[in-house]
Amino acid sequence: MRIAFIGHKRIPSREGGVEIVVGELATRMAALGEQVVAYSRRGHNVAGSEFDNDSSASDVPYWYEGVRVVSVPTLEAKGLAALSSSFFATLKAIMARPDVIHYHAEGPCVPLRLAHWAGIRTVATIHGLDWQRAKWGRFASMYLKFGERTAARCADEVIVLSRGVQEYFQRTYGRSTRLIPNGIEPVEPVAADLIAKKWGLAKGSYVLFLGRIVPEKGVHYLIDAFKRLDTGKRLVIAGGASDSAEYYESVRKAAGSDPRIVLAGFTQGAELAELYSNAYAYVLPSDLEGMPMSLLEALSYGNCCLTSDIPECADVLKGENGVMHGVTFRQGDVDDLAARLRELLDHPDTVAAFGKDAAAYVTGRYNWDKVVQATLKLYRGADK
Image (cartoon, rainbow, N blue to C red; front, side, top):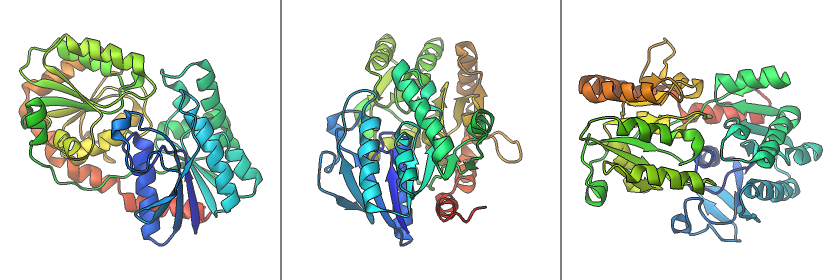
């Protein structure tokens, strides 16, 4: 089967959850013998050009673990990157006539109707209700909502990552969708080495947030809550801005008033593994999510996780038998977040108990091989 992916920035990349998901799907499908092309944006990493890979600005197609990666023209301006790259990617894909084009995220779905009119099977994965994100202005939000409607009305199949979004599509558009969550791989925790030398971090000496520094992630709640706590532990905030320079600057200023807070910036590779492996606990205080890959990753490293109680986070922590595999606080409630953090800091035995079973739980429930097989069935129209 010939498969085209559209909507990610580039692979390999950790610029966001979409990039991680596309990378996993594309490479695993290629390993199964499928012919896979990923149409990637041309341009710099959103966290800064210093994080570009060797092919970020290349016009020449290249191969990555069996996947042919083709760069497409991209207007690197806020709100225009997804619009321009997905449009040019769609034109290239239509000319190549794949068996299916798989779009990722709402904005890139706008030109999906062109592929639909061309008679090519289309699948759209809605990673979250992007038009609700605070970083977008009125025009960008309208454009994202248009992409959502296009997917609902024109895509042959729509994949969602949570029950909440599945109910939203049924309620708003009368559209049935397929719930196929993300997956995660087992990992081996590693000792603190690079992070010890760079920031003086030791095993269990810090609370970790890792993700994009954008308003909907709720980092401001976490900083406010942490400042209220009398603790010798530190707070590490790892991540780069994504079209949210003003918000990142506000976070930097807020963090700067407390010497216990470390802004680690965009992190990948060995540093990322060390940060996950040695955290006392992981905190994700989001107002809005699709299905947070960082939460799956944190659990896979055996972390006790504290998240807001939005369904997209709480559903990950709640096992099929209703048992919670982490702790939640009331969304947007800084007092409650501070109280839950205080409890975890005061009860290391509770933290250890949650962390002990976290990895086995999350890797058993969220499996990439199952995700790939379910997605391939949709491509073939076999999951009826």
